Image (cartoon, rainbow over all chains, first blue to last red; front, side, top):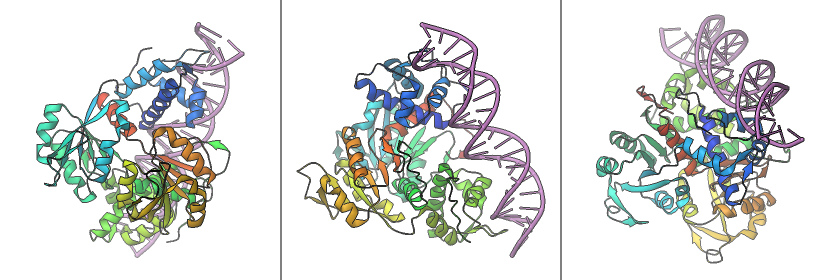
Amino acid sequence: MTIEIPSDASVPKVVVSRLSLYLRELQRLESAGQQTISSSQLGTLLGFSDAQVRKDLGCFGQFGYPGVGYRCDELILAIRDILGTNRSWPVVMVGAGNLGQALLGYRGFCRQNFSIEAVFDSDPLKIGQTIQGICIQHIDKLPEVLQAKGIRLGMIVVPVHQAQTVADKLLAAGIEGIVNFAPITLTLPSRVQQVSVDLAIELEQLSFALTNKLAKDLGESHS
Amino acid sequence: MTIEIPSDASVPKVVVSRLSLYLRELQRLESAGQQTISSSQLGTLLGFSDAQVRKDLGCFGQFGYPGVGYRCDELILAIRDILGTNRSWPVVMVGAGNLGQALLGYRGFCRQNFSIEAVFDSDPLKIGQTIQGICIQHIDKLPEVLQAKGIRLGMIVVPVHQAQTVADKLLAAGIEGIVNFAPITLTLPSRVQQVSVDLAIELEQLSFALTNKLAKDLGESHS
DNA sequence: CGGTGTGAAAGTTTTCACAGCG
DNA sequence: CGCTGTGAAAACTTTCACACCG
């Protein structure tokens, strides 16, 4: 059960995103007491084919037992190793408005070893306030805090007109990955990873589907 | 400049998601005063090729002027028509915790004609409270409110262990599309569209990239 | 000239189907 | 037998390259 990460960029992004879904489901199954699972069971739960599950895992090594399936505990550890979440990741958040404060309070992503270790804002009224045990600092302190705490990941939770400016500051401070909640595509060098969350875009995907009646009522399934 | 929506399911999901990005960028450009744009300009801003932009739009008709490009105002209207956001979409939200309240306050998705028209919770202490001008109702009222207000879209913002139960109730009330903020893949009939937002999964995509050093510092670009 | 629209080619991802294993 | 791992085939998506247009 060795994990091989291909050194070339041969793993499609979409495989990595499914890996996250496999992990989430496996953790649920394991805490429900399930010990092993087959590729077809896991695929059915998530709306994928059995072959897809096996091919995806096959990118990184051999984890299964013929005739049995996969051991949940082993596979969880293996996927966490692949995703890099067996170590902990301190994260910085910029923007302490409504949404930022809610995300601070929402401890759901701690389950995967991410924790918000510093919060910044540019509003003088907010600086010095403590929320969820974390003191809001002025954004000019970004470089030294990132350095001191070894933080490589950041979240942008500021209004859209400030987002690119904040991104530039994170960049200058040496950030390596950004989750952007502002509705704008950031211009960043390709060495900095970017993922984006935009509720309007999610809703648009739904309104397109409903408007154009793509749904084909075929009974139980997933998207 | 007629819009043709293929009646078969011939438009890939990924095309629709890029359409949303085109729209977002076009709206930004237009409000900055830009009148026309070429496929290569738009592509460069978002990290796509010019051919991809043209092919994507080509799924729905002909919108450009050879030698000129696209007129921002026309293309915005056309894409909104395709996505279905020239009409307004009332949305229901289930779960009035931290995150739910923050989303209620965050008016960013109003820009695309979505508005939260009703909020439900199961906590007796919350029912009857008014937040952002909307009164929180008991979840048992779901069917009648959906019916009365013609609501087809819902957002699930409850803790993970309640999410599937809530999804079942939305389903029973006749919902057609769900944005799910809980970290679980919902089991739903395929006629109901589902999109999912999970911060831990977004962060995992970044930690994978950093762990496996996929970035290849090639100067300005996008993901 | 600068740009669109679009078939055809190239590249990528998914599915199939089956050998092999415990 | 039940299930994995994996080449080969099929399906799908992106890129290329060029006719055509104003």
